[in-house]
Image (cartoon, rainbow over all chains, first blue to last red; front, side, top):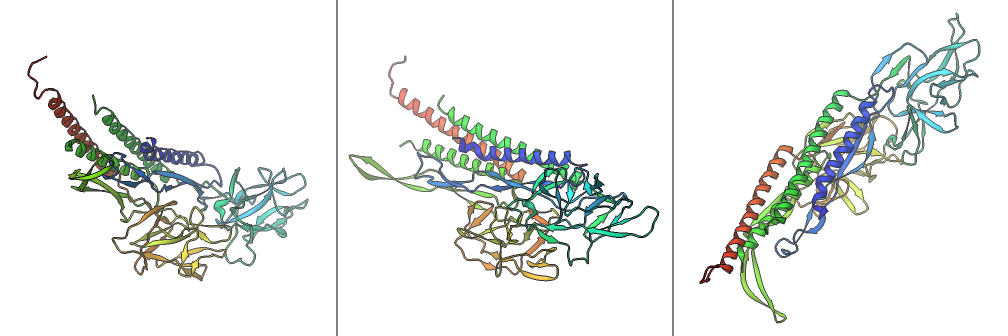
Length: 259
Length: 248
């Protein structure tokens, strides 16, 4: 009996999940480095099912569709809008598929795409959430960060001096399947088996920049797109509830046949 | 033999099944690459009736149930292409399908939401490899380009060409999980289909038409139900009133 209602219910439920992801995206409209989420749906294949027992010879077993299911959510790893700040401590990775390995204060290895750097008590570069790029890079005492070159080389200079000198180079990795990464909040991503082994990226690929320095990356959520999706999700939700209501009316007619 | 009752009941059953099909289509209004089910209702199917009794069946003649609901047909009409900007979202304009290697053999789909797995193979959302003309495609690191003819490039290097398969128009498909279709028919590599990178093909369900069909199905169902009640009423009169001599 509930199989009759399931397609419409699954449709309404799917739209509800879609609304959840839209709400999540809209809430992060102003979150630097946020990557938009998309809910992915797939049709459930039909199950052989007898429409009417009394009419087995009339109708026979037929496959009636069983609705829709959520198969997962994916992230859109495209670059968000870039704001130029001119501050050498602001950093964005220029390629959407590269990540910067960092160590969290508790020792966990995570990966970042962008962020604002600062210095810790020992002069090491750390992101503002406390995660430290691996390997650690120290800005020697008496110097200040001048810029991070497009290939990731960190350049420092003494105040008042025009000469810069490199103190090291940021290292980058790439994942075969970035969709497998686990979003850990605060712009951090955690590696999983599904994402595959991180591969070093950037070495010998100097023909296009790896790092944009002095810029911030805004959320890549597109407000107009999300609002359009919101309207469509709402309409689709209503239509599915309407279908549910209609099927229910049919069942009611059937139950009132004998008055 | 109370034929009207059976005919009305068959009509109700057919309209109910049609309603279920429509409701399944509506549930998938947002499923990329979904191809809607089209109800087919056949009319005037003759059934052969048997009388059962004394442990044997003897033929008594034929009955038409007026309507008969048939297995829905999959409507493979083109869905709208929607831009997503993701490099591994692919959509086909034309009649071809992507070929997917699954444990149950090759299956076909129009749902081009692909990604790379941990071995850098191009796979579907549920992890089955997408077939190129020379088998699964393994993409080295770099920017992926897909040409309209299905040729996959990484940087300037050609990796292979997507296997795009076409079927004759009357091919019977069966649904499989993950928005895939299965068929016994043999396909041919397509020469005309175009692949768009950064797009997905939206479901081909038309909201307005589906809701209109739903209204029509509801009214047909109500009519059939009314017919059944009328037949029942007629019988009631026949049973209780005909031949009655005295009132009360």
